[in-house]
Length: 163
Picture 1 (cartoon, rainbow, N blue to C red):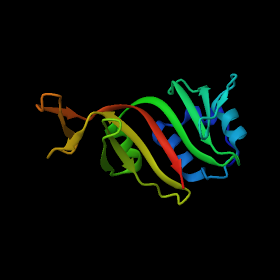
Picture 2 (picture 1 turned 135 degrees about the vertical axis):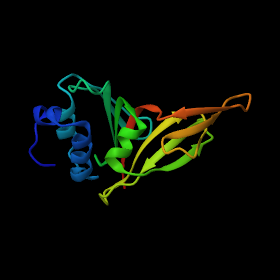
Picture 3 (picture 1 turned 45 degrees about the horizontal axis):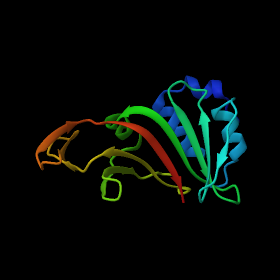
Picture 4 (picture 1 turned 45 degrees about the vertical axis):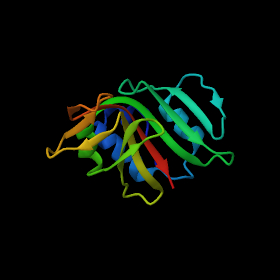
């Protein structure tokens, strides 16, 4: 994944940071190398069906970072916990596909990647959002089926999924 240090990553703008990972991540990325890049603290791997390595981030832009990998140490996902506006993610990755997910009562924003090793970048908002006429606005239907307009929602994570 190139020879980059934590200090170099921390100096990058958030856009350059995610573009760096979009360029260099593959399913075969070194899990321990990523771990050392993201944290210098202890961690525990949990395995419900895939291994999940929750890390305390060295970079204060992120609350935590989670690396998801399989039995063969193949990278499946990286999840960054951060607060970011949808418009900032659009600035990084371009347009998105809006998908309502009934099982979790959320709306997913799915961004395609230029890297064939990455299937998507993804984030979610609570509730079912429908695109309105405005570029950064959505309509949310509350429990009483009343329309509430949401402008440029803030999301709490960004997930990279490998192919």
